[in-house]
Length: 306
Image (cartoon, rainbow, N blue to C red; front, side):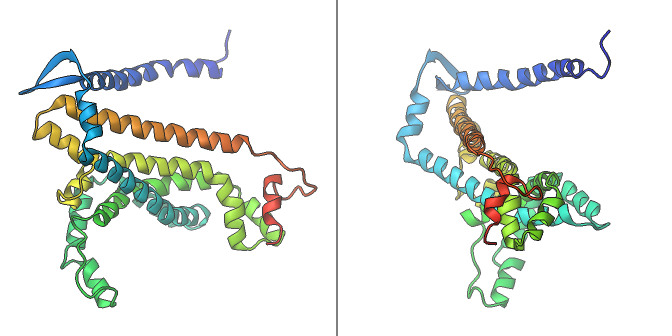
């Protein structure tokens, strides 16, 4: 008789939810991908004949190619900005031994439940020409005239970063908690400075988690609609904006499906490429033998000359 704690039995329980999730994901994807290969007849009607017209229209019109490049640029910029701002915060929270840490983490969790509409409306007030941001910048002499944040790519990036920053902080906090503090203490004992420990000990260990967190932000930003619509003011055309216009204004479901399919394939391919490069880089690392047991072998060369 098999024991209840047999891990194989628990894996069997995952079959049902995985099958339901696959069904809910695969079926809608199949229908809208197949719809993209048909011609629009107007008034919501779709031609049954197979056609590549929608994709030919996308790749021959600079409007859509520029929108794709703009979407990738804004998403990548948001991911890098969130990584730069979020990592120090996550590190401090992971290493802090304070009674306020759980409260701060709770605030971050609560911030993730605030809808993008509420966040964007608040940013519209702050980023307006007479808003707090322009007032502070003019007060310290950084700018001579109010900067136009709304309707610009800078405003969209701020909105996307404001939406995804709590998520990346929570994710990086979880990753950083897996790094033993003893590794940092051992590196300090070998004469490494705090900056050297940060770049030679912590970053190499948590790099896969950083890449995963950055990809999560990139994916969310690439598919975001509310923030580019509200903070972009109709002047920052991203793929999500074009998809919405194709559905609502043009009632062209096949073309909207083609835009969605292209965005899905592009983002999915980028995630696969990033994962492949990360696995390949990790697999090429060869451990170096060292006489010291206090510091992991991979960290010894990095600590020399610190």
